[in-house]
Length: 92
View (tube, rainbow, N blue to C red):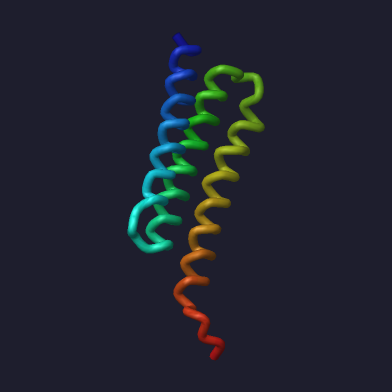
């Protein structure tokens, strides 16, 4: 039962990965595309790591560290991208 739940989490993560790539072919702004891609990638990656946590619980310290790192890194990267795009090239 736990293996099945692990595979479901991994499958949901892969679906999030593909779901985040679909807005890239749209006519929206680059920032919208980056935002949707980064959110879907973060959720997908975390879901995959949770699925791995269910399948190989003996590696829980590394997998918990991976989840925390994903959350912090992608959040900080989003703020950096927003800051860089809001400056608009003004060098005041």
